[in-house]
Image (cartoon, rainbow, N blue to C red; front, side, top):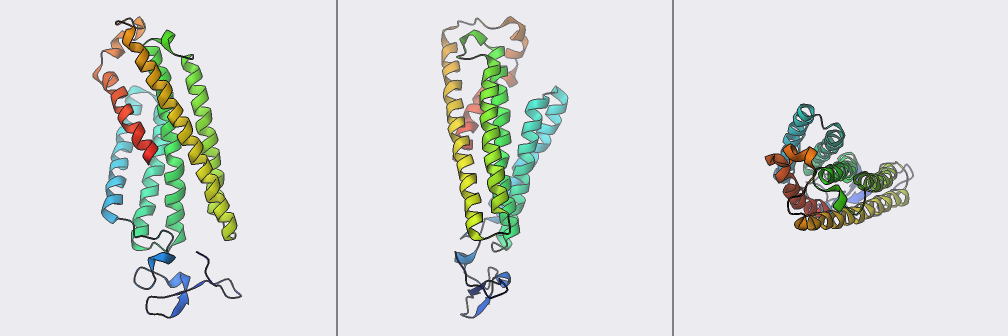
Length: 245
């Protein structure tokens, strides 16, 4: 929303009691939420719950990554989870002060970029699952899946980072809006690549139905583990949540 400013650049808004005050003095008690960074007061309990959940998962993933030495997957997960935690800290700060630009940018940038790292971790896992199952049934070589989708993720991450830099700049509102538009473009590209990934993953798992238990022998011990059996199921349930986020 465009607000009137004086010669020094100070913005002014009407307060709830009808007086005109500098925007910097706005809070939930003095100004309408229509002038806030988001036109609602973020839930304290809901965002705290997400903060705790992502914090616990971050701790668990850090420990499991060290134990099982899954460095590529774990590094991507940890980066993404750290950004999620920081983003929800920003959301919690917005509960008490939705007019402050700083926590808004922390929330917007971290919760926009963070999922790109989580998607990269998922993309890395598919090639491993294909190798452990039946690599000859895949449409592409296992390594090709990783290269294609991680490249798509990097492109979306670059777009979101550039957009976030513009949105966080101290320039005019048009530049900030351009940044938001670039971030949306990056998110749209990310969602499109993720949907393509889901389709190709489903195609591979569908092809396994006719294998009659003929799998790669070197991964037989891995396939019999409970964690390996439950991982694809959990991934299939969480990916739609990622698309809706």
